[in-house]
Image (cartoon, rainbow, N blue to C red):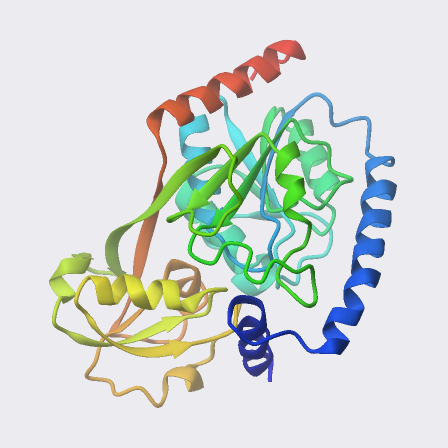
Length: 339
């Protein structure tokens, strides 16, 4: 049911199918509610979070755009610069109530798939909570002064020092309409107020005049779910595989595999899908199963002996990375904060 709904909405938002009248009729209500929400939350920001440099990474569209790989990359460069960052996240799909510290061994149903993936790959503290302000306060109490918020561009109660908006260059803003008739959470005019616009892929169809930062997702190694030797993607060239993707834009993963000349049998699932062994029961066991890293954190206990996940790394201009580190240092110096 959820998969069918996502498919129909994507046909409308990113395809040629026009939104029905009832969806367009809901847009004014969404626009009004969004403005009230922003006004109210912006005026009720906590005053006790000013002792940290908070970097918010988000987007203005629904669905994936490459935020998590970017968050992981930011954490690595900030960590290597000696700034000791940590991550806060709502933990979409998690069962967490209150604050929950994420470890590489955490249960994805409890903390969420993306926070777990970030904790495993970034090597920094990660806290999930429905209240991002409470999560930031807890990190500040532990002496952390550089905080990266995974998503939260529209969470206006959270103070922010730096805003980074990520855009999927392939899909752009879809039909350009606000929710629910289109994929936009906010109007593209919102981009004028963010500090950095990072475009994942080719910036086709984006408004002119935007100063953007190019980002590519470079394929890493294929790692087995049950441990063992890793392989390069090119070593699967010519192989026929089952490709599993429970992400916002599964076609991106399938296309990446096909670009490596892998013969793909597509198995798209809804974003943040909770897998069970039954989902793999109909896949012939003699063919490898390839999936995203986000899917892998939820499939490790399913006994999939011939399954692999592909790691990806966000690649950004080194000059921009150095400038961002300088911006964070300047933020800390203005506030007389020692990282």
